[in-house]
Image (tube, rainbow, N blue to C red; front, side):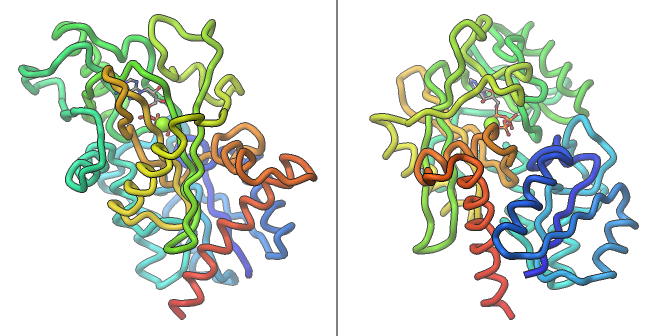
Length: 328
Ligand SMILES: Nc1ncnc2c1ncn2[C@@H]1O[C@H](COP(=O)(O)OP(=O)(O)OP(=O)(O)O)[C@@H](O)[C@H]1O
Ligand SMILES: [Mg+2]
């Protein structure tokens, strides 16, 4: 297959990573016997021209939407969503369809869908600076409603009273121009699961996310300064592995995700696991991102982790490729 890898200024903030990660993905695509071409698009016009030019069978995008914002995802109320443009032209692509991509980016929408399906999420509310925070229980956790890479997350995200809550909601509105998702604080262990494949071929690969204790500040949370620097490592999920895999599978069913997603979970004060979010474009930095680490945990090849990485990319493309064929 001829595969178009789509990225741009937002590739790191929104998607699998920066240009060096895109090069790694491209190498793995080629190693899997496909043809890889990369398009770095900065504007919607450039994106449309790239699609008009054609010459590919499948698109794999690091971008949810076309944006010049390198720092954070943003809400993109006006702009063009990649999956919408691809759906509009009937072009097959890797990953979930447009509606589901938007539901995954919006953590409030994700929580709504999961809660309705009986999948456990933390108690949550969406708050803007002018909203009344009456009824919130403390400690609470405040984060932007549609970001990634722990952007906007620090020890200050854990708030003990209404004054701290208001300050943090204002910070989220000011810095990220979006509402704050206010959740029950989850003080327990953290897990993540890679869900790979569709239908009967779907696999849920669970792991536990660990950081050396000394790196935590006041709380055992993955602050933005702990992300993307090799400090978070995936370990076996141990006695909770089955539970994590089962919840991840239920979440994917409830949302209708396709091909590959990564699902983050944390235990609440009573020890029960709750889903924090579903990542529609998981990070793909070789050996460092959680998805490749999870894949290695279950599918380690004798040739080592770089070979596992290539196999992961091969498997993701195979899932999307099989769907693309069945639609033709
Ligand atoms: N309700 C919560 N209680 C405690 N910690 C939380 C809560 N929500 C998020 N966190 C912490 O903040 C981190 C980032 O949160 P979350 O996974 O929702 O956002 P993200 O920035 O989209 O992450 P990713 O980079 O995985 O896409 C989590 O890994 C976890 O450590
Ligand atoms: Mg996360």
